Length: 339
Ligand SMILES: Nc1nc2c(ncn2[C@@H]2O[C@H](COP(=O)(O)OP(=O)(O)OP(=O)(O)O)[C@@H](O)[C@H]2O)c(=O)[nH]1
Ligand SMILES: [Mg+2]
Image (tube, rainbow, N blue to C red; front, side, top):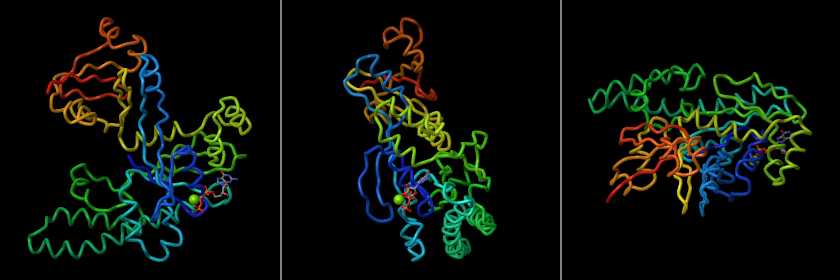
């Protein structure tokens, strides 16, 4: 899963990037100044792995890009090129400067308008072409109708996500490089002396998280638990926002985490919510999916209670499921297969 950090110049993008990747990064080319890996903050996989004495523990991971395209390069009108890079990302995390400016709204809007403008440019080029195709009966009128509705909301300076498209309609336009339809999370970068307003949960319909990102960056650099605590206390903060941010990302994207628990390796996997255990098997290995017989499922809490697959089985905490079972967040899964 790929996360792009976007935002205005000096809004705190790189501060968030460093907090997320915790040293796992490299310089990038093009419109990302650097790319790195965010290792999931979900501790379940470590608890399970330690419980059974796993040799290797592999948490879920996200790819993170520190995007730099909305400044000078955007003004040089390299929008097409920039778009091609940004479009490969699943979620946009928009950092908004609320620490050195009174006007966080215009900081948000400047980037928001870049995204809207990019989509607008695209539909305006696409609609006349599609009209010709519809006339020649080589394209469907339905697609054209959807694009016209999209055009209207963009002209009102609203994101495509504000248009309530059905799942079917979304499929029709899935191949288009729209940015304002992507899940977006707003990260308000507040001053470290300001109080976090915990009641404020959304910003213009986007899920909102507020934090002083310079402190988040510092927290990532400290490994000593007591020192971390001191720093948090000094600024009246409860915890780093990274756990909450990951939850929000999973919720917005509609993803869950499931585990495979083995002595050789205990691992956490990201999966689209609503997926069957057969689809989950495919993530693990195509052979396991091909030879799928049944799935042994134990929920995380039950596994922790029982301590092992065997004990969970004898306590009747394990249930056997067929291909159609819908995997739940934090299920421990063992696939019986034969090839
Ligand atoms: N006081 C304060 N300063 C901050 C905060 N977050 C970032 N800064 C400072 O603001 C400056 C810009 O932060 P960066 O994280 O580099 O921002 P950026 O968006 O990556 O900047 P560019 O890549 O140059 O566009 C740095 O000097 C930071 O130390 C904050 O929460 N509070
Ligand atoms: Mg930067």
